[in-house]
Length: 463
Ligand SMILES: Cc1cc2nc3c(=O)[nH]c(=O)nc-3n(C[C@H](O)[C@H](O)[C@H](O)COP(=O)(O)OP(=O)(O)OC[C@H]3O[C@@H](n4cnc5c(N)ncnc54)[C@H](O)[C@@H]3O)c2cc1C
Image (cartoon, rainbow, N blue to C red):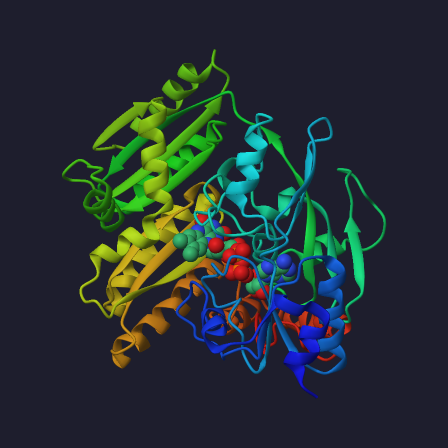
């Protein structure tokens, strides 16, 4: 059997086989390294994809689907000898139905491209990961991505109505549909969300869309103590104010934005809360003032209100770029960042943040904390050095403790980045702590029912 020439018979020029073309597919945005794939297939349509998948299934060849390759947990890294299937050519927006509030997009469409298209209709697709320029519809569904607007609009799972999927056998199936309601047996659309390419390849999706908010304004509040941000947010919610965006950044993050983007902050600041309020033109000012009054109760160093679009956009882009600007705070060039990603109920934030701060000190590591705090999502960004074995051990121990803190407060070891390779042990720990090892066994049983040969993205989520 000559796999590459067989695949070329199905897909011709859409099969990459030379080493220099394959090497980039060994990695994603995480620190993990995979094996060089036997080939990379970049099919142009669902029939071609289905034939490739069927060939792989019949010949026991491992498959890893790939969108933008921006996974931070190694979920798109190929483990073992197999092929990578890129959805790069599934890049069309097929239908936009404003009156029914949905859009149908192929799975390789990038989120920013989708939103550029929707802004022509004064609508948008709310899930908004900081990687929105590069990540795709299929990748974000497969990891149940969140992002900045989660405080008001939730995460990807709240916006997917249906999809077309190529199963591991090559069969093409349709899940869900174009209606908000559907009570027609098992909900396979939901099963696909967060499945990280382990049970099928999404080729197109029907996504809910929403009218753009009429007007937005921003309040920046600066604090000395870590728990103040969490308490201030809880205070807003308790008074019925639901921010569009609620982001939290520590001094290390702010300093990196000052170095990279020239955005300053008051001297005594250790933590900043960025709150966006969305409203009608008539009531925005009143709502911002109400929110500011509540924020003042938590002793901010200072408070800044703005509706200036340019200024707001500058800070928004800087926040989205934090992952890379943070690298300016490295102590040595060999350091890289591991992005911790946990979630707790928003009311638990003050206590959880305090425990995380104590854990950072205990493990003696350098960590920057920021997060989509509006939905309880904390990112602990750990400066790590693979050359320093002892430090990496402390980093691993901190990651385990971070996960345990989240679960003990009623949260999860993974908020929005998925499990991939990175969090397999943590996922086990979560179900152990919740006295529910059966959940993991059930996940494995579902995987094997749909993919009996375990060919799709083997070694991700669980072993
Ligand atoms: C700078 C930066 C910032 C980030 N910020 C955020 C953030 O704010 N919020 C957040 O949630 N995430 C964030 N991420 C993580 C990442 O962008 C998300 O996990 C995103 O959903 C991955 O999408 P992708 O298209 O790049 O998928 P990939 O990385 O290519 O793949 C991710 C997983 O999905 C599977 N997959 C991809 N396409 C398909 C398909 N069509 N069918 C089936 N399975 C598929 C892959 O096999 C893999 O398991 C960030 C990443 C970076 C690098």
